[in-house]
Image (cartoon, rainbow, N blue to C red; front, side):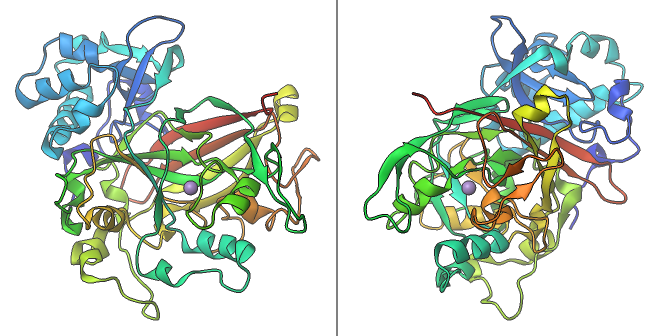
Length: 438
Ligand code: MN
C-alpha cells in the first residue's frame, strides 16, 4: 500500500531557489499551511503555504485566477482569516490543491511569473493560529513518559491498568492555545507540599514544558457516527509542534479525581505551520505492539494501522535563558526523541475518540502527550530530566535548572528524514516565561 505520489518525488526542485537548499525545512515536497499577514500591518490575516524562505499568499493566488474547479474552490477557502473552511473540505480537495501548488512551484513551471507575484519573505510576516481550534483533547501516548511520571506521582503503581487497553486522554481548553512566540505569565494557584498540613496560594514553582506533536482534525464526523480506524486518513488534516506547558505543583494537588485543570489551561503553544498528513506520507512506518502486552481490541486494530500507523517525526527541545539571550549564547538542546515511539497511533486516537459517537469538527486539535523515548536524553519534559525536581541539572553556561525560570524561552523543533525521501521540517515553536502577575 503506497500513499506516495508525484508531490513526494525527491527529484522535484523549485524555481524558488531557497527551497532547494539542503536541510531546508520547506522544500517543494513539504508545502505546509499557516495563517499570516505582513508584520506591523493592519492587513487581514489569510492563508499561506511555505516554500523555502517564502510564503505563497493564497488569497492573492486565488485572486490571480490561475486555477479553476476544486483547486479554485480550495484557494478561496484558504483566503479567510482561518483555515477551518479549507480543513472542512474532503481530503481529495486538500490533495488537489497540494498537487496544483507542487506543479506551479516546480522548476520550469509555465505559471512562475504569475505565482512569483504572490510570494512574501517569511521574515516579513506575522503568524496567527492557523485555525479556530474548537475542542482540544490531550492524549498521553508515550509509555516511557507515562511510566516515569507515574512513578513520581504513584511510586508503587506507576502505570494504571487501563493504559495498555485504550489511548488515555482528557478534554483540555483551547482558549489559551497560542501561536509560536507566545509569552505567558507564570501561573498562580493552590499547591500543597507533601509534608504541609494545608495548601498555600502563590506562583507555580514547578513550571514545565511538554514536547508533543499536535494533530489537527480536518473533515469531521456526524454525531453518533464513529470514524473507523481505516478511514482516519480522510479526517487527519495535518500535524504541528506543540508545547503543552504544565504546572507540576498545581497538578499534583488538583489532579485527583477528575484530572488536570489549572495546571494545564494557562498557556500552550503551537508552531505556525501545519505539515499536512499527505506531506508526512514518506515518513510513516510500521506500528507494533509487544506480544507480552494486551493486543488492541478490534476497533483499534487493522492491517493498515500495523503497516503505516506510526510517524517518524524527530523532535527536540532547546532552552534559551535570559542570560543566554543577553550574552548572545546559542540556545542549548535539552532533549530529542521521535514520535515513532508512541504506544498508540494517531489512527487509534481518532478511532477511540469517536467510537462512542463523539463528533469531531474541522479545526479540533489533539495533543499527542509528551513524547519521551526509551533512552536517557530522550525525556520530553523537565520533570523527567530533573527526576521529579529532586536533581537540578547544569547548563553549558554554568546556570542550573530543575524547572523553568522567569525569562526562559523554550524552543521546540521537528523534522522528518530518511533515505529515499526529501527531508521536511516543522519549523519551530517558542514560548517565553514571564514573571507571575502581581
Ligand atoms: Mn500534555
